[in-house]
Image (tube, rainbow, N blue to C red; front, side, top):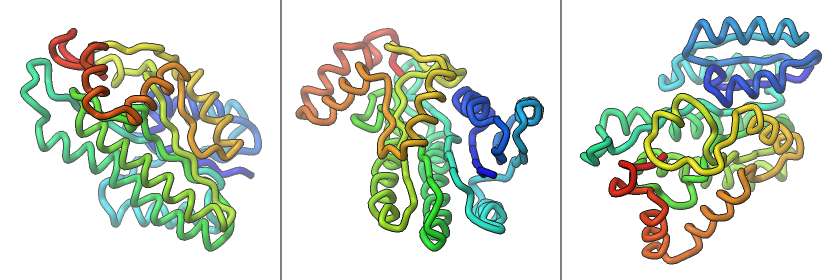
Length: 259
């Protein structure tokens, strides 16, 4: 029995990943905030022949989070843990800036929780010599987008942390993959103003992620044209990259902002 944990299971990519992994021989532990969606996913898993457990533990509370993670490691560590829960905020249509309360909550969910899970589970996976951690970053990690500074910072942190974890855990038989999607159709994506080039459907993204996880790829980034362009933003001098972002419409002078 392969045990697979997915946080953020009720989001667009999360639901698509559940559908990919819902098959006989898999036990899915699904975490999400939307009770009705979790129940629907549970029925989907069982109909597909998979076992399923549901959780709505408060990820931002250390005691609750670590107690849940401890239970996941009994009797042994999960085979795959996909840390997918996340949120986004922006500087507003008038460019007035992010509310600190929103940015603080974002950093907790997008960065602190993945780090807490990586720290806790990484040690236990290292001790048993098995398991794989999958951390959800973004192509925005390559170079911060002007309208989503906190989101960009959180995803850059996840990228760096995941890369470091992989180097630490690989010699002990533990895999770590950092996922860096571009624009994937979802409520969160469509609520953000600005251009969304090379938009993918979540089903396609989930298939690519699952294939990369199976191969224990260090970085699972897509789609290629946007990935290539964002990589160059990180390589070029910052002043040039920032001019390019403005030229492509990622500022308030062009359609009020961006992803």
